Length: 333
Image 1: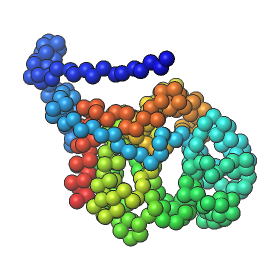
Image 2 (image 1 turned 90 degrees about the vertical axis):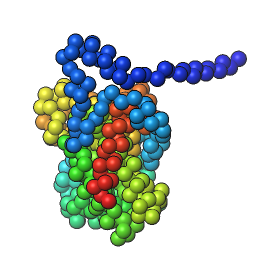
Image 3 (image 1 turned 60 degrees about the horizontal axis):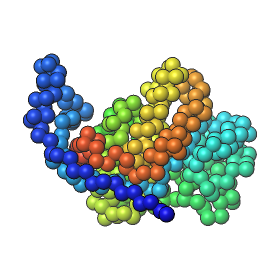
Image 4 (image 1 turned 180 degrees about the vertical axis):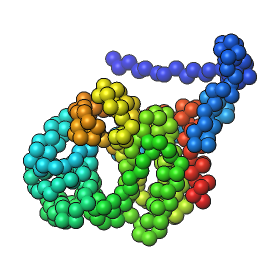
Protein backbone atom coordinates (compact mmCIF):
# COMPACT_ATOMS: atom_id res chain seq x y z
CA UNK A 1 0.00 0.00 0.00
CA UNK A 2 1.33 3.44 -0.93
CA UNK A 3 1.76 5.77 1.97
CA UNK A 4 1.15 9.46 1.30
CA UNK A 5 3.25 11.87 3.31
CA UNK A 6 2.00 15.40 3.74
CA UNK A 7 4.03 18.34 4.94
CA UNK A 8 2.16 19.99 7.81
CA UNK A 9 1.16 23.61 7.37
CA UNK A 10 2.89 25.43 10.23
CA UNK A 11 1.93 29.02 10.92
CA UNK A 12 4.57 30.71 13.01
CA UNK A 13 3.43 33.65 15.13
CA UNK A 14 4.50 37.02 13.79
CA UNK A 15 7.55 38.36 15.64
CA UNK A 16 7.42 41.67 17.44
CA UNK A 17 10.56 43.33 16.12
CA UNK A 18 10.97 45.79 18.98
CA UNK A 19 10.74 42.99 21.54
CA UNK A 20 13.14 40.94 19.44
CA UNK A 21 15.75 43.72 19.38
CA UNK A 22 15.40 44.35 23.10
CA UNK A 23 16.06 40.65 23.76
CA UNK A 24 19.17 40.82 21.57
CA UNK A 25 20.47 43.83 23.50
CA UNK A 26 19.75 42.08 26.79
CA UNK A 27 21.48 38.89 25.64
CA UNK A 28 24.53 40.93 24.63
CA UNK A 29 24.46 42.61 28.08
CA UNK A 30 24.43 46.02 26.46
CA UNK A 31 27.71 45.48 24.63
CA UNK A 32 26.14 46.07 21.23
CA UNK A 33 23.13 47.92 19.87
CA UNK A 34 21.12 46.76 16.83
CA UNK A 35 22.83 49.29 14.57
CA UNK A 36 26.17 47.73 15.46
CA UNK A 37 25.11 44.60 13.59
CA UNK A 38 24.30 46.47 10.39
CA UNK A 39 26.76 45.80 7.58
CA UNK A 40 27.53 48.15 4.71
CA UNK A 41 28.52 46.67 1.38
CA UNK A 42 29.34 49.02 -1.51
CA UNK A 43 27.16 51.73 -0.03
CA UNK A 44 24.27 49.38 0.75
CA UNK A 45 23.25 48.85 4.37
CA UNK A 46 22.19 45.27 5.05
CA UNK A 47 19.86 44.89 8.03
CA UNK A 48 20.09 41.43 9.66
CA UNK A 49 16.96 42.13 11.72
CA UNK A 50 14.42 42.34 8.93
CA UNK A 51 11.11 40.56 9.35
CA UNK A 52 9.10 38.93 6.60
CA UNK A 53 6.66 41.87 6.75
CA UNK A 54 9.44 44.26 5.73
CA UNK A 55 10.73 42.30 2.75
CA UNK A 56 7.37 40.99 1.52
CA UNK A 57 6.20 37.46 0.96
CA UNK A 58 6.63 37.03 -2.79
CA UNK A 59 9.73 34.82 -3.00
CA UNK A 60 9.39 33.36 -6.48
CA UNK A 61 12.37 31.19 -7.47
CA UNK A 62 14.47 32.60 -10.28
CA UNK A 63 14.86 30.55 -13.44
CA UNK A 64 17.97 29.23 -15.13
CA UNK A 65 18.64 27.85 -18.59
CA UNK A 66 19.46 24.25 -17.65
CA UNK A 67 17.28 22.09 -15.43
CA UNK A 68 20.17 21.59 -13.03
CA UNK A 69 23.63 22.98 -12.46
CA UNK A 70 26.26 21.53 -14.79
CA UNK A 71 29.70 20.53 -13.50
CA UNK A 72 32.87 21.25 -15.39
CA UNK A 73 36.59 21.98 -15.52
CA UNK A 74 38.67 25.03 -16.40
CA UNK A 75 42.03 24.01 -17.84
CA UNK A 76 44.99 25.51 -19.71
CA UNK A 77 45.63 23.48 -22.86
CA UNK A 78 49.34 23.08 -23.59
CA UNK A 79 49.64 19.49 -24.84
CA UNK A 80 46.82 17.98 -26.90
CA UNK A 81 47.50 14.30 -26.13
CA UNK A 82 48.14 14.74 -22.40
CA UNK A 83 45.28 17.17 -21.92
CA UNK A 84 42.98 14.78 -23.78
CA UNK A 85 43.67 12.20 -21.06
CA UNK A 86 42.99 14.77 -18.36
CA UNK A 87 39.69 15.81 -19.92
CA UNK A 88 38.60 12.19 -20.35
CA UNK A 89 39.38 11.45 -16.70
CA UNK A 90 37.11 14.31 -15.60
CA UNK A 91 34.35 13.36 -18.01
CA UNK A 92 34.41 9.85 -16.51
CA UNK A 93 33.88 11.46 -13.10
CA UNK A 94 30.81 13.35 -14.30
CA UNK A 95 31.98 16.63 -15.85
CA UNK A 96 29.59 18.01 -18.46
CA UNK A 97 31.15 21.39 -19.30
CA UNK A 98 34.64 22.31 -20.54
CA UNK A 99 36.26 25.75 -20.41
CA UNK A 100 39.55 25.33 -22.28
CA UNK A 101 42.17 28.08 -22.57
CA UNK A 102 44.40 27.25 -25.55
CA UNK A 103 47.94 28.29 -24.56
CA UNK A 104 49.93 26.54 -27.28
CA UNK A 105 49.39 25.20 -30.77
CA UNK A 106 47.41 21.95 -30.55
CA UNK A 107 45.48 19.68 -32.89
CA UNK A 108 41.72 19.73 -32.17
CA UNK A 109 41.29 16.16 -33.44
CA UNK A 110 43.88 14.92 -30.94
CA UNK A 111 42.60 17.06 -28.08
CA UNK A 112 39.02 15.79 -28.53
CA UNK A 113 39.77 12.18 -29.44
CA UNK A 114 37.07 9.88 -28.00
CA UNK A 115 35.17 12.90 -26.64
CA UNK A 116 31.55 13.30 -27.73
CA UNK A 117 31.20 17.07 -27.98
CA UNK A 118 27.50 16.98 -28.88
CA UNK A 119 26.72 16.10 -25.26
CA UNK A 120 28.88 18.80 -23.66
CA UNK A 121 28.96 22.54 -23.13
CA UNK A 122 32.36 23.57 -24.53
CA UNK A 123 33.96 27.00 -24.43
CA UNK A 124 37.28 27.44 -26.25
CA UNK A 125 39.34 30.53 -25.41
CA UNK A 126 42.35 31.57 -27.50
CA UNK A 127 44.36 34.60 -28.58
CA UNK A 128 45.67 32.84 -31.70
CA UNK A 129 43.58 33.28 -34.85
CA UNK A 130 45.21 30.24 -36.46
CA UNK A 131 44.04 28.12 -33.53
CA UNK A 132 40.60 29.72 -33.67
CA UNK A 133 40.30 28.86 -37.36
CA UNK A 134 41.50 25.29 -36.73
CA UNK A 135 38.90 24.70 -34.00
CA UNK A 136 36.14 26.28 -36.06
CA UNK A 137 36.97 24.03 -39.02
CA UNK A 138 37.02 21.01 -36.73
CA UNK A 139 33.65 21.88 -35.18
CA UNK A 140 32.10 22.57 -38.59
CA UNK A 141 33.09 19.11 -39.83
CA UNK A 142 32.55 17.10 -36.64
CA UNK A 143 29.29 18.62 -35.34
CA UNK A 144 26.47 17.95 -37.76
CA UNK A 145 24.00 20.11 -35.85
CA UNK A 146 26.53 22.96 -35.34
CA UNK A 147 25.83 22.69 -31.62
CA UNK A 148 24.98 26.01 -30.00
CA UNK A 149 26.64 24.71 -26.85
CA UNK A 150 30.11 24.89 -28.41
CA UNK A 151 31.84 28.27 -28.52
CA UNK A 152 35.16 29.79 -29.58
CA UNK A 153 36.31 33.06 -28.02
CA UNK A 154 39.10 34.86 -29.90
CA UNK A 155 40.61 37.79 -27.99
CA UNK A 156 37.50 38.07 -25.79
CA UNK A 157 35.15 38.07 -28.80
CA UNK A 158 32.97 35.08 -29.65
CA UNK A 159 33.61 34.01 -33.25
CA UNK A 160 31.80 30.65 -33.28
CA UNK A 161 28.91 30.10 -33.47
CA UNK A 162 27.50 33.38 -34.71
CA UNK A 163 25.07 35.56 -32.79
CA UNK A 164 26.36 34.50 -29.39
CA UNK A 165 27.97 36.90 -26.94
CA UNK A 166 30.32 35.79 -24.16
CA UNK A 167 31.36 38.04 -21.28
CA UNK A 168 33.89 37.59 -18.46
CA UNK A 169 32.97 39.38 -15.22
CA UNK A 170 35.10 39.65 -12.06
CA UNK A 171 32.87 39.91 -8.98
CA UNK A 172 35.50 38.73 -6.49
CA UNK A 173 35.87 42.11 -4.75
CA UNK A 174 33.03 44.33 -5.98
CA UNK A 175 29.68 43.95 -7.72
CA UNK A 176 28.02 47.27 -8.53
CA UNK A 177 30.57 48.66 -11.00
CA UNK A 178 31.25 45.32 -12.79
CA UNK A 179 27.51 44.67 -13.16
CA UNK A 180 26.84 48.20 -14.38
CA UNK A 181 29.62 48.11 -16.96
CA UNK A 182 28.88 44.64 -18.32
CA UNK A 183 25.13 45.20 -18.57
CA UNK A 184 25.66 48.48 -20.41
CA UNK A 185 27.97 46.69 -22.84
CA UNK A 186 25.51 43.81 -23.27
CA UNK A 187 22.70 46.30 -23.89
CA UNK A 188 24.78 47.99 -26.58
CA UNK A 189 25.60 44.62 -28.19
CA UNK A 190 21.94 43.61 -28.18
CA UNK A 191 20.92 46.85 -29.89
CA UNK A 192 23.49 46.29 -32.65
CA UNK A 193 22.54 42.68 -33.36
CA UNK A 194 20.17 40.58 -31.33
CA UNK A 195 22.14 37.50 -30.21
CA UNK A 196 20.70 34.02 -29.83
CA UNK A 197 21.95 33.92 -26.26
CA UNK A 198 24.46 35.60 -23.94
CA UNK A 199 26.95 33.76 -21.73
CA UNK A 200 28.37 35.39 -18.60
CA UNK A 201 31.35 33.77 -16.87
CA UNK A 202 31.75 35.14 -13.35
CA UNK A 203 34.94 34.96 -11.30
CA UNK A 204 33.72 34.67 -7.70
CA UNK A 205 35.44 35.66 -4.49
CA UNK A 206 35.11 34.56 -0.88
CA UNK A 207 32.13 36.69 0.20
CA UNK A 208 29.71 33.78 0.37
CA UNK A 209 26.27 35.36 0.90
CA UNK A 210 27.05 38.43 -1.21
CA UNK A 211 28.02 36.18 -4.12
CA UNK A 212 24.71 34.31 -3.81
CA UNK A 213 22.76 37.57 -3.74
CA UNK A 214 24.80 39.06 -6.60
CA UNK A 215 24.20 36.13 -8.94
CA UNK A 216 20.47 36.20 -8.11
CA UNK A 217 20.37 39.97 -8.68
CA UNK A 218 22.07 39.58 -12.05
CA UNK A 219 19.23 37.39 -13.34
CA UNK A 220 16.69 40.00 -12.27
CA UNK A 221 18.73 42.75 -13.93
CA UNK A 222 19.04 40.69 -17.10
CA UNK A 223 15.28 40.23 -17.36
CA UNK A 224 14.84 43.97 -16.81
CA UNK A 225 17.42 44.77 -19.50
CA UNK A 226 16.08 42.54 -22.27
CA UNK A 227 12.52 43.61 -21.45
CA UNK A 228 13.54 47.27 -21.64
CA UNK A 229 15.08 46.60 -25.07
CA UNK A 230 11.94 44.81 -26.26
CA UNK A 231 13.28 41.22 -26.16
CA UNK A 232 11.69 39.87 -22.99
CA UNK A 233 12.32 36.13 -22.70
CA UNK A 234 13.87 35.96 -26.18
CA UNK A 235 17.57 36.15 -25.28
CA UNK A 236 18.52 33.29 -22.94
CA UNK A 237 21.06 33.96 -20.22
CA UNK A 238 23.74 31.37 -19.42
CA UNK A 239 25.66 31.89 -16.15
CA UNK A 240 28.94 30.16 -15.33
CA UNK A 241 30.99 30.57 -12.15
CA UNK A 242 34.64 29.79 -11.40
CA UNK A 243 36.82 30.78 -8.42
CA UNK A 244 39.05 33.82 -8.65
CA UNK A 245 42.53 32.31 -8.50
CA UNK A 246 44.26 35.28 -6.91
CA UNK A 247 42.06 35.26 -3.79
CA UNK A 248 42.70 31.60 -2.93
CA UNK A 249 45.00 30.86 -0.02
CA UNK A 250 48.56 29.68 -0.66
CA UNK A 251 47.99 26.80 1.77
CA UNK A 252 46.47 23.87 -0.18
CA UNK A 253 43.97 22.65 2.42
CA UNK A 254 42.73 26.17 3.14
CA UNK A 255 42.47 26.84 -0.60
CA UNK A 256 40.32 23.73 -1.01
CA UNK A 257 37.99 24.90 1.76
CA UNK A 258 37.75 28.34 0.16
CA UNK A 259 37.10 26.89 -3.27
CA UNK A 260 34.36 24.65 -1.87
CA UNK A 261 32.31 27.44 -0.35
CA UNK A 262 32.97 29.64 -3.40
CA UNK A 263 31.53 26.80 -5.51
CA UNK A 264 28.61 26.44 -3.12
CA UNK A 265 27.83 30.15 -3.38
CA UNK A 266 27.74 29.77 -7.15
CA UNK A 267 25.36 26.82 -6.98
CA UNK A 268 23.06 28.52 -4.46
CA UNK A 269 23.20 31.65 -6.61
CA UNK A 270 21.35 29.73 -9.32
CA UNK A 271 24.23 29.29 -11.74
CA UNK A 272 23.94 27.12 -14.86
CA UNK A 273 27.55 25.90 -14.82
CA UNK A 274 30.34 25.75 -12.27
CA UNK A 275 33.96 25.14 -13.17
CA UNK A 276 36.75 23.52 -11.17
CA UNK A 277 40.35 24.61 -11.65
CA UNK A 278 42.54 21.72 -12.73
CA UNK A 279 46.24 22.32 -13.17
CA UNK A 280 48.61 23.25 -10.35
CA UNK A 281 49.85 26.19 -12.40
CA UNK A 282 46.85 28.26 -11.37
CA UNK A 283 47.54 28.30 -7.66
CA UNK A 284 50.92 26.69 -7.08
CA UNK A 285 49.39 23.49 -5.72
CA UNK A 286 47.41 20.71 -7.30
CA UNK A 287 44.02 20.08 -5.74
CA UNK A 288 42.02 19.97 -8.97
CA UNK A 289 40.59 16.47 -8.62
CA UNK A 290 39.80 16.92 -4.93
CA UNK A 291 38.05 20.21 -5.66
CA UNK A 292 36.10 18.65 -8.50
CA UNK A 293 34.99 15.75 -6.30
CA UNK A 294 33.90 18.23 -3.63
CA UNK A 295 31.82 19.89 -6.32
CA UNK A 296 30.32 16.54 -7.26
CA UNK A 297 29.38 15.83 -3.64
CA UNK A 298 27.63 19.21 -3.37
CA UNK A 299 25.65 18.54 -6.52
CA UNK A 300 25.07 14.80 -6.48
CA UNK A 301 24.69 14.04 -2.78
CA UNK A 302 23.48 17.44 -1.63
CA UNK A 303 21.03 17.65 -4.59
CA UNK A 304 21.19 21.45 -4.45
CA UNK A 305 22.04 21.63 -8.15
CA UNK A 306 18.64 20.15 -8.94
CA UNK A 307 16.71 22.81 -7.03
CA UNK A 308 16.11 26.13 -8.69
CA UNK A 309 17.00 29.05 -6.44
CA UNK A 310 17.43 27.15 -3.15
CA UNK A 311 17.78 30.31 -1.00
CA UNK A 312 14.62 32.02 -2.26
CA UNK A 313 12.93 33.39 0.84
CA UNK A 314 16.05 33.96 2.91
CA UNK A 315 15.47 37.39 4.46
CA UNK A 316 19.13 38.41 4.23
CA UNK A 317 19.66 37.08 0.70
CA UNK A 318 16.40 38.54 -0.61
CA UNK A 319 17.24 41.94 0.90
CA UNK A 320 20.78 41.97 -0.53
CA UNK A 321 19.49 40.75 -3.92
CA UNK A 322 16.93 43.53 -4.08
CA UNK A 323 19.36 46.25 -3.03
CA UNK A 324 22.00 45.18 -5.55
CA UNK A 325 19.46 44.99 -8.37
CA UNK A 326 17.97 48.41 -7.54
CA UNK A 327 21.35 50.14 -7.20
CA UNK A 328 22.69 48.74 -10.48
CA UNK A 329 19.46 49.40 -12.38
CA UNK A 330 19.25 52.99 -11.12
CA UNK A 331 22.81 53.49 -12.32
CA UNK A 332 22.09 52.03 -15.76
CA UNK A 333 18.94 54.01 -16.45
